[in-house]
Structures are given as C-alpha cells and as structure tokens.
Length: 267
Image 1 (cartoon, rainbow, N blue to C red):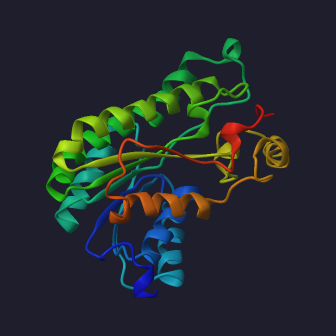
Image 2: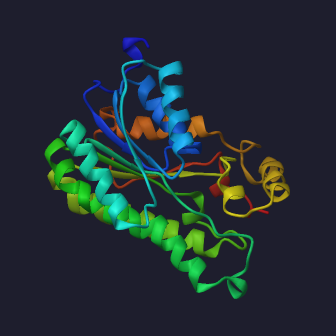
C-alpha cells in the first residue's frame, strides 16, 4: 500500500456489521487497503468472517487485528458483545459502520405478514439504533464517525419492497437526526445509499435466482450508467466518507447508485 493511498493512520478502531459477505466484506478490505488495522467484524456466518479476514491478509495487509462477534443483531446480547469485546481488545471505537440489513420483497403489502414487517424493522432500524447508542460514549471520546448503509429505496418506491423501503427511509432520518444532535460532540453521521448490487442478500432472503438475474439485466435501463453496481464501488464511498478527508461532511444521504434515483422506476 502506498502512503499516498492512506486515508487512515492505522490507529483507528472500526466496527463493521454484516462483515461476512457482500458490501460489508468489501468495506473491510477497502479500509485495510486505506490504512485501517483494527477491526471488530460481526456476522452470523463464521466461515464468511474468516473469508473476509483472509481477504484482508491476502489483498491488503498482514498487520490487521480482528475481534469477531458471531450472532444475531436482533438480540441485544449480541450487540452488547460487539461493544464489550471491541473495548476489551482495543479500548476505543472510532468508526461504526452499520451495514447489516435484511430484505423482504417480491410480495405486495396485502400479502406480507406483520412478522415480516417486524423482522425487517428489527434488523434494519432497531438494531442500528441500539448499537449506535451503545457506541456513542466511545465515539464522543474519539470524535468518531458513523456510516449507515441504506439504499436508494429510501427515496423512491419499488414494487413489492414496501417494508424494506420504509425501513431505509427511517434509517436515513435517523442519520440526519443523529448528525444534528451529535455534531457538537464531534461525531459525524452519514448514510451511503447503494443502487442495485448483486451481493447475494436477495437470494438469502428468499428471492429466486431468476428474479435476481432479471433485476441485474434490468439495470441496463433503470440505472443511468446502464449496469448494476459492485460491492467495491460501495466500499470505496464508505471508506472515503468515514475518513478525515470528509471532516466537513455530516448528515449526508449519499447516493451511490449509478443514477438509479434519477431514472424511471425499477422492474
């Protein structure tokens, strides 16, 4: 890694939720490329977390230190373990990246269940609020940064994805409110809102592969750049906004969506 590419000093402690795959895993690797050496990685897939760590060591640095916390973020004990284990290992928290999320789609509201609604909001909103609140005392000490990984679905409606879009709209407003409240304490809070990225989450949440392939193909028309995004492209923006290069940026809802937000509706 060239010194000129470093956005971080190497002393920062970063928590990344949903780090076992997709955008979360790509973000960890990108942060390591840019100089971060201390991570708390969370997820429900132990093998996935190991793959992320292996990628960091293989592609970025052999000097990284990791704390792993396995568990379901909708369980308070898991969230408490994330903060407790990070402080036990590193003694501080500089950056919190709330990346973990869930999608219930392909059903109109009429056919959705209240359980689907509850599960979506428990992970996409409630877990983020609880984890962030527990991190705030340490983020105040470090004058740190929070990045919430949201979605273009927060600002436009997609057919049969109502609960997901609603949860991401709530997440964006949480970003704005927290940025307003914590700016005086030196904490920056921002959202990064991807367009369509084939991370595997849609299939894990029950979307048929054929429907995912159709969505990827439709990106030729729905995204201004004529394609879907990559996890690396989202990770680049997350790393940049989390860094001191963006020290005057807070309360932003940053679309990283290939122009999806300014084109015709999705499929």
